Image (cartoon, rainbow, N blue to C red):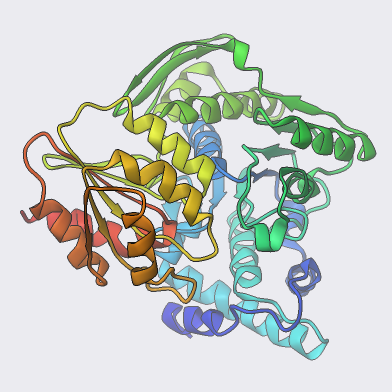
Length: 428
């Protein structure tokens, strides 16, 4: 089987046969020799920021000469992005070879009454990839939640990391911050260190209770140690503890806080690995995370951002306020299971012109319904174009010198337009 065959087979297993259960992922990996138990893992959960935190840590480790695996989800353009080693994504050939082995194990699991899903399979391929390539460390991003996530199958990671917690995926994780924190806290393991972003009081209580039960404690990020913040479109600089004027290339003040949390984790990793400050400074600056306040063109001025929940949109809104522009042209679409009423009420009034489109996903919010919601939040021009690349091109056509074009609302939308948008801008 080639990569396309494997991906098509995986796509047929998107939905569980019954409820989602971590037992399926565990059983699948057992048939493969439980490779995750032989990898040094930094496990990262959180509603927002976890992908950026993973990339900061991985980049610093890689620049220190540590063979570093990185598992991220969701990918933006190519499934191979999900698993990489030292910044090089898994090849089509290795994906196919490992995918075929996982398929054989999956067939055994099916016969035993288990049903591994798409994400269970992708996780298994990635753990197998890291194990067989003998990485020194793997930075693993949780897919959703934590307690029941496919990645949460190791007995004892190096440490657990929890990014910002807020409301998202409420139909799966619960409708309060405390309930969602409980799911995130599921990655905390017995006697293993835990590092956390600044959290709401109800989340702090949940995380601390879980840590106490697991005979460990939570090291929360202390914002008072973050100083000398200088924001610009190409990133930021800041000082944190002993790190003076460290530079990052991910934009927005929220990325400063993500980077500071990553530095806490990196300081802990110095116990296990030789990581020097020069490599940390270099690695932090090199860290990238596509479609997170990402400038893909300066003329015209175009930014892509995958924010899809209220906290993420507020971070984007704050970032927009730091930029200079004449008119704001907003390209937007969203999934129907998101908090789209609050999101649109916060974001839409900022725009001078809005172009809405539709995501090619069964969870999409119908474009006509979205149009009515957007119109209710603005007196500005609203244009609806169902084809999202046509919509993107329209946003460029509508712009003039000095205007700012931002596309946002969903990582699924970013998946669909990013590659085409960059190519279109290149050929203008």
